[in-house]
Length: 268
Image (cartoon, rainbow, N blue to C red; front, side):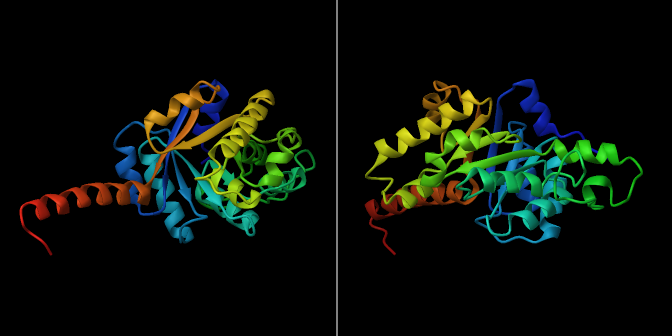
């Protein structure tokens, strides 16, 4: 039971990709996204949300039912454990966070590559959901499936931006994504007050990725924000964040409704 990595196929074909970010592993949320037929994959932001491995498997099952791929964003400190469990659950891509040096990037790639003489990785044979819960005799097929994992990296610390050329030169990186808030935090800046400096750093990261043949991926909160990135050559987008979308709706519509009630002389 080996599966083709749909995410890898999209990247290999040069096609654009569209995702949205989820903070819940509830299958109904993933299915609600999949039912729209608009998104190539969902990203579970495990860095921001609680989860267990049963929930991870159910999220991927729901995505697969709707022909979507899946990505998991993992914390830095336990990235090897979390990434391997995500892959075993069926996630097709891993988004690594908080790396600051090429050596750290190289280590994370090794942690998700098969432990073979040719690959030099650190991951063994994980007989879980992604291969049908069974051992099989074709190790070469397992190796190919493992290597097909899409490996993406956040470039979100000042140190990472400073050595972006060296990081992009590391073999095995498929995608990178700039993180404005963490970059501002690690630079002693405030995103709101230093927008020009943060944007300049983002443009530097995007240009370096494209020069090295790496796909830059950008998070946006509305389709109107895409043109700025499209003009730079970006074609991979993540649109919205589950709880932010919910809160924005409730804030805007709830505030408007309360204002209408007050205009009608109705107060709480």
